[in-house]
Structures are given as structure tokens and as C-alpha cells.
Image 1 (cartoon, rainbow, N blue to C red):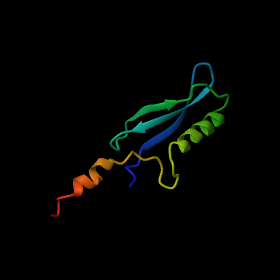
Image 2: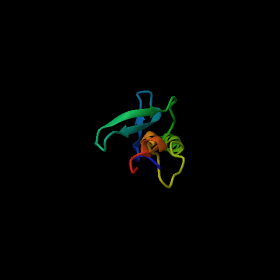
Image 3: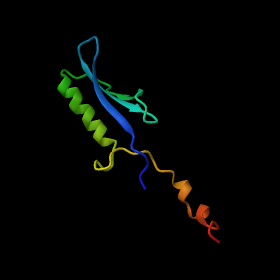
Length: 88
């Protein structure tokens, strides 16, 4: 079973040198506050190049693009040992 969908935003920043950097931001607990998750290590000449590169990284965070990036499900809650004896 998949965990909860992770709220990730992609943005592009322009640094003082003029290069563009993609930035992935993550929101926790469905709030509107976002924290930096990861950023491009090198700049790009255009906004479009940075956006495309960031999108490729974002896509790579999901094993299945039909369901999106998910938190790991807590499998310990569903182990056989925890279920044994509940209905005995």
C-alpha cells in the first residue's frame, strides 16, 4: 500500500550571476509553508532549461507517475505478528 502523497513544488530562481537554478520545495502536513528539498548544483542559461531539468528530477522522485511521489508506508503496522491474536 502506498503512503501519503508528498506535496512537492518546482520553482526556478535566478541568481545574481544571471544563471537560473531549479529548486524543489516540500510542504509538510498539507500546510502552505514550503522548505527547500533540493536545488540544482549548476546554473542554466535560460529559465526554460532550468525548468525542464527540474521537472526531470521531480519526475524521477516517483516510481509511478500515475500516483505521484509517496511517503513510504509504515509496514510495521501491518505485520502478521501485530494481527495475530486480535480476533482469537
